[in-house]
Length: 318
Ligand code: NDP
Figure 1 (tube, rainbow, N blue to C red):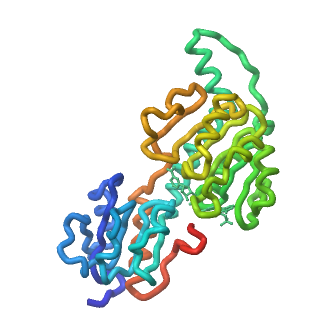
Figure 2 (figure 1 turned 60 degrees about the horizontal axis):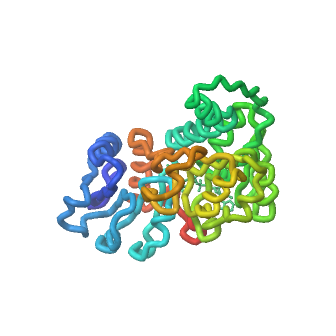
Figure 3 (figure 1 turned 180 degrees about the horizontal axis):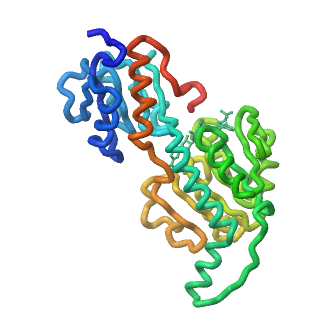
């Protein structure tokens, strides 16, 4: 059956170990009442599936669906998707780039950065000692925050930080202009950006170019006592070098949402470091009520043979 304007052809398959199927089904049904939405465990005939909304499905998942027309990554980061060997040739891959997700991420980044800018970890430790330890606050503009990655999430967070009066320096691959933010682009500027950062926020995608970007040498370029906030991907940072630099005090503190290995193994020394705050990869998530609109729009576009929005460029890896 061919699609009309509101009823796409075929069915959608859902896969995620982290997201609730019923919530997503409901949100999508509200937009596309005619679309059949199946959990991957309910698929009787893979030929029926035209759309896949998936987060880290098992190997071979996409290869079983001969009529797949659109793959929607259930999240913003596509590093676990672009290298797969079961992506059918010619089928567009899209990702979620949702303002609510960006706002949630900015909330986490603001919390983490202000926590460091206002010396909260230092006060937490003083409190544990029962000590009234006055430390005069710095003016916001005296704290320089470098944000690596000025995409959907990074640019939003950078703006929120700038709104707090912090001095924000941004870095991306291609030149960007954001009011009130000193923007730099390209590898040749990275070391200078890092050298100025009292707080370094990592918001880059993981690609062949960015894997291991923050190696020992680059982390050592941070001013002594700087804080690191990584909300992007663990493999962007040399975790062993980061741990040593946190131990030596070269890195003053870190807020880490992502790790080279997840879950972070129980024996990892980071768990027991006083100057490290760990959260289990949840700085932001795709929010069904708001993301369903762009997913529905893309499904309808593809079902009318139009090009979907938010496509991932597999050659650049993001
Ligand atoms: P975007 O693709 O919108 O933006 C990526 C940014 O990084 C762009 O500014 C891009 O530059 C820049 N960039 C990419 N490669 C390079 C490079 N080689 N050198 C310099 N800059 C580079 O991504 P999002 O903002 O949507 O997301 C960023 C990452 O956040 C995701 O890839 C994901 O890994 C992570 N994430 C983490 C979550 C969590 O809960 N912890 C939740 C959601 C996402 P340019 O502007 O020139 O393209």
